[in-house]
Each structure stands twice: as C-alpha cells, then as structure tokens.
Image (cartoon, rainbow, N blue to C red; front, top):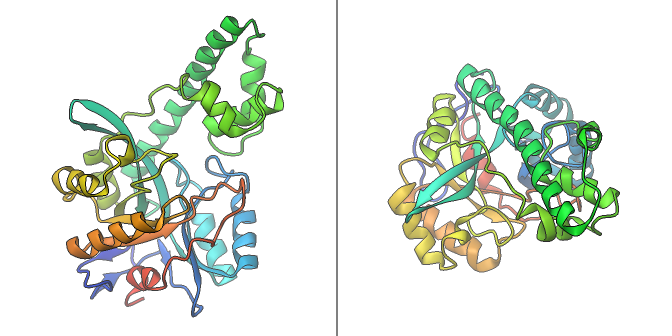
Length: 320
C-alpha cells in the first residue's frame, strides 16, 4: 500500500473508475455487509465504548466495513487499522471536524468527516492537537457558565474537583456529552437531553475556529476526502440551522461548498427518507461521494443499523 490515502479520481453513478489505496483503508471481505462509517469511541472522543469494544461489537453485529470518526482526534487510528486487519473488518481512517461556517451575515457550526487520509500527516496531526487543546479551555469556560446558572438557581457551584472528576471518567477528550453525564451523576438532571435543554445549549462556548477552507485543505493534502456530515440533522450541527428547505440547503452547498467537499453523508441515524433521497440525488448530479453511518456514541448502541448500501464500500475500495 502507498502513503497517500484513498484517492478518488472520478465518480460515475455511483462507482469511481479508479482509486489508489494506502494504510488508511482495508478492503472489506464479506458480501452483503453492514456498513457504518460514523462511529465515536471513548478512546478518542465522546463515545461510551473503547475502540477495542467498538470492534468487538462490530464483529458481533456482522459489520463488515466501518470507520472510527472521533472528534479532532486521529491518535488511535493506527490501532484501529491494526484491529480491522486482525478481525477481517473493512476499515477506512476517519475523523470528525467541526467547522465555523459564515453565511448570510451569521456564523453557524457544521460537522465534516475526513476519510482515507494518511494518518501520519504532520500538518493534520498538529492542527488536531490545537483543536483538542482548545477543547480543554472550552470545558473550563462551559463550567464557568454553568456555575453562573447554578448561582441564579441557588445551587452549589462546580469546583476544580468537579472538573477533575469529569475528566477522570473520560478516556478521550472532555466534551459536552461528558459534562451532561456528570450533571446526571450529580442528580442535577435526569438525562442527556435535559442537560442540553436546561444548561449546555445556553452555556456553550465556541469551538476551535476551523474554517471549511482550512478543513478541506488539511484533509485533502493528507490524501483524504472531506464529507459534509448529517446535513439535515434536527438535533445536531447541520444546515437545518440555516434553512429547513432541502432545496435551499442544496443551493447553499452549491454556492459555498462544492469546490471544498468531496461527498455528503446521505445515510444517518437521524436522516428521514426524504433527506436521504434528496442527498443521494444531489451527490449523483454533482458526482460526489455518498457515505453513511449511525453516528453511534453507544448511548444507545445503534452501530450497523442504518442500511448503508454496499456500493458505498465499493466506491471506497475500488481497485484495492
């Protein structure tokens, strides 16, 4: 294998004519496989399972092709590639990047998935390290905002010991879901959704200011491809924050993103049939990669349940 990652030269409806390959991708070995290209772990970010547990669960569920897409973190990708090889599971290197996207006079937060990059790329590693360091500062600022809310409610405030306790329960990067879990543990809220509704939305702090242009350059120069994640997600960072109209979402992509992305996540755990159909058609018109995944954080465990068609793996594995 080479070192450049998955290189897509041309896509025809829907299979590309040629690709190169590298250590960034293992070819799936099973027919009629389950596919999940959007999974998080506790090893790298905000999942509940370690990376090893994710692979064990994937094998148990018959998932034949997957990607670990932890937030701002590729440090465990070499281990993932090795585990995939040992277990005979198809694998492509992944990462989820949050982008600050300016549009129509305001800035919105959008998520993108990087696939098939060279995990040894120095520029990508260094930028992700900066983003992770910012997450530590952000967690402290979120806690300060929480304490302001607690004071208004007459509730005891969090201390450095609380922040240390939050971090102690995290294998990867401390993020808002972990803070939500700590609020549950302390009996302040009953569940994650309540934590976000009551506190974590209003107490949020901006993420690392990565632009789409920079994200695209970093992933592509590392030999990978950049994919717009869950474009119409009602509960996540998505184009829904700009417009609920799928046609208008497509216009935003055409005007502002088309030269900077290589694909769209068409299948997702929170995508309805209309959304999936719309974005499949859009990708076919513009010769973009189509990907899909559960976005599973293991709460609950929904890995491999999305029904991503097998031709998605054929796109990523052509000529391996």
